[in-house]
Length: 118
Image: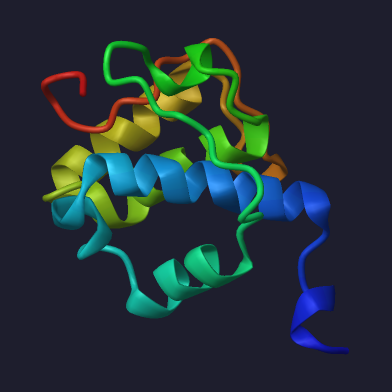
């Protein structure tokens, strides 16, 4: 199996959306995720699909794929919460909004990037 076989087109599109969101958020957010993870996102994204991120709309209103929204939620949970307490509150919010991250299901929630709602 070569590198091109690791991700299918749908995965590559999800990685493109995730890459666009991370680039929009900037280095403060990118630097908090593992470098290897960002490298995979960057290298295996669909370079022909370049989504536009609008700062005035939450991710779920921008037509992003459900698996992209789930990845954003996982990044927030695992890397962007500053304290264990914040992580616990965010986890409870995900459960409250019936998000099943393990199955990639995201519905009816504004993915909270930081406490200011950005």
